[in-house]
Structures are given as C-alpha cells and as structure tokens.
Length: 231
Image 1: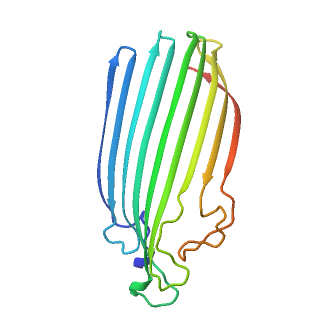
Image 2: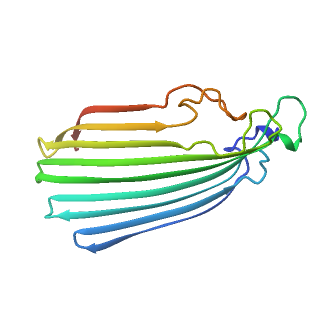
Image 3: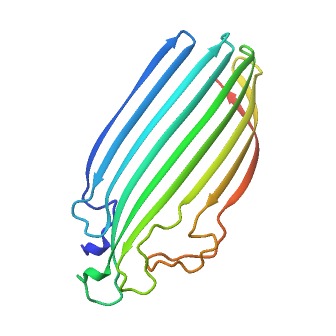
C-alpha cells in the first residue's frame, strides 16, 4: 500500500478509552445524571494523514417533577476534540524532501445546552411539550509548513464557528386509549462563520483550496402532524 495514500479508517490504530456515568436521585421529584468519557487514538504506522486524535466529553442532566403533571428538565454538554495530521506536498515524482512536509493541528470545541417542559394538561388525555436547544461549535486549525513554498503560512487560520438554535412546541391528544394525534411546530436558526467560505477566495495556504461561497445562514420552520396507534 502506498504510504501517502493510507486512509484513516483503514490504517492501523491503537485506542485507549475510558467512560463512566452516574444517576443520583436528590429527592423523590429531582434526579441528576452525569456522564463523561475520554478516548485517544494513535495511528502508529501512518507517516501522513491522521496521526493521532483525542476526545473528551462531559454531559449533565437535571429533571424535576412538579405536582406529578409537570416535568422540567435541563441538560448541558461539553465536547473537545484534538487531532493531528501530517502531509507531504507532491508536485513531481520525488519524495523524502523534509521541506515539503506540513502539519495541521485541529482543535474543536462543541458546547450544547437545552431545556424541556412537559405538562399533562389532562392526564391520560392531553399533553403539551416545549423545548429549546443551543449548539455552539468552534474549530481552529494551526498549520506548520515550510516557508520555501510561495504562499504558505505557518500560523492558525481564523476559527470556524457554527451556532444552531432550535425550539419546539407540540401537543398530543389521546383520541382513544390506543390512538393519539400529535401536532407540533419546530423552528431552527443556523449561523455559520467559516473562513473557507466567507470572503476568502483563493486561500492563502498552499494546502487548502478556498472558495468565495457564502457561509450558510438560514431559518427553518416546520409544522408537522403524526398519529400513534398502540397495539
């Protein structure tokens, strides 16, 4: 196999991983859960491409019941991903020139939070649900390359950031004990700030191909209707 063509999903990998969690009932109406994990991957025989990565995540959830008819919950999560990649700039048949080596260190951070409210307006007959969620992700790339190539740089690129807000409101009505109808409305707002799109044109880094495409920003509205039948 050509070492410059190895794919990360086929290359030899050594993984170290640990994870755990707990659920704690602080009171008869209050429950708290925590979970977390850490993983490290080493691609021992990959001279180029993805050589190592590590990830860490921590999540928490709190649920509170009010009067047996209202349930309020909230959650938050943090995820961090670090990855290292080596590259080699080839424009002829020669190889092994250290001046053509380049390295990228990627640092990703994802933070999420949200809340959910469930209300049994008429227990066993009519229920209302409302929720809101926020996801905020940031990606940073630090590039090291030889200054012998025109146009290359050895400095971090501007951070790319994606933010998504989502809200949902729904109601479920039990027509019979076996049949229920649920109708809802969902709205989502997505904002992206990515230097590979916004006002970059031809990227100032030899290993990255830029474009003048505008980063996606949109608002989506969805009205939906479902039915449920219990056998």
